[in-house]
Length: 564
Image 1: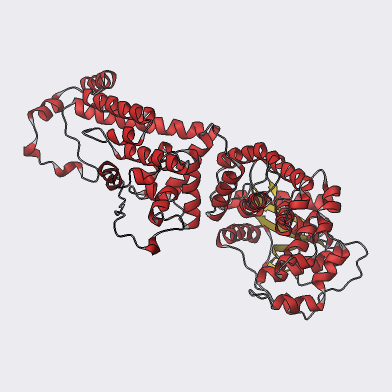
Image 2 (image 1 turned 90 degrees about the vertical axis):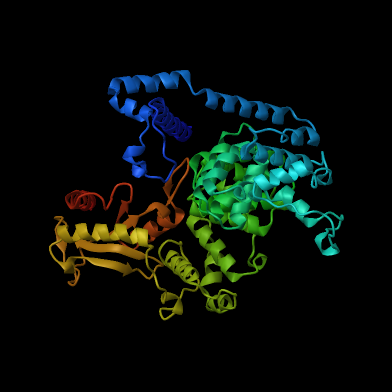
């Protein structure tokens, strides 16, 4: 709600400023140059008497005239507004196709906004089978609306069999009903299309968002408008619509906390009514994981639904649940029942790809639900050979997950006696590097460390742990909090691993925290004998002065040494 208030507040402020500027200028009789035209384009000798008089007026009179203009309003603007309101009212009250199309006749106030509303209503009526498209597709009034919206609707004359579906209806007609993106994006640019979103229905907003995802088009103005209007709608999304919105958000990597909260609330309301389809539930779970959106309430509701309807759940839906729960660092209050009822129902044969089975075992590891049999199945020598037969082969991601599991089996798993990766395994040969944004943070931390430590041999960077991840910075301290050189053996040294935590290493949403991958990394480091210092992006910034960054790290070192 706070985000919506800020949006509305900034919009009103800009509108007021624009109105104040234009009104004061018109009140003074000064012509306003069109957008993109410089004000000095008007020659000095071309100034009108009104301009000369306005230039001679005291500033106080001009300000008074501006506020008087604002108070009284512009008669022409008021007339246009009233005409537009009357057209809106007629569109709302229209009950028939002819009633809608009649509005377009001899009406100078008819705009693209009104055209879009009429097309949207006709599309909705045809979807609900209230009217047939054949009733208006060749109507000259409808064709005029399509031309206003930048669309072409060819006549049905001469349509061959290839252009007809099984019902004999032209394929382009069904396109009119479903391709709502053309009715919005086809209007003009993204900014203008975004303004028209409020004129279409909620189901059509969902369709527009889905089409954006299908076309991989990440239009920020349009997505923000869709998020605002869907979030503001009093109408609830059904389960399919909620799944489509989350899928679009995850596909386009579009984060919006208000929209996510609205969708999750609607999912919780609609979820108990769904007793037949698990695919849509699986889609919702997968999207939440990709978005790293952590809301404990919706995750618990999804857990309860899966436990109650486990008989109809597909293996891929259950696997998606475990992977999302692991990534979001979520452990249900019913974890024991989840282990008995859901984990035991999944076997290796349920997966067509060996990489999917590997992901499943990896997710169980982060949840603390993995069994020795799971670990042995992926750490055995034959698994790597089988993994090579996958279409994608042995990817870097698969190698890092295998290294995570190999380290987990040695350091955390109790009494594990199964196979491990051999020391000469090709799995250890995996290139690892941070994304550019995270590397900027790491470099900022290293600059501060170089100022804090006495020499370069006291610091090691980008240390390959052989556990599937890098240590961003490694240094040693003695019991008196003095840094030690790394090139000399010191068995009593306090080994400190500094790990930068950026935006992608945490979960977002109602209940923010480190991701499951981050937690697993820290657990493995601590079991290996390191003291871990997390350096989160919201506490440590490269925009801070060097002195502040040095003081931050120094305070962290003191806390670690004191706890030894």
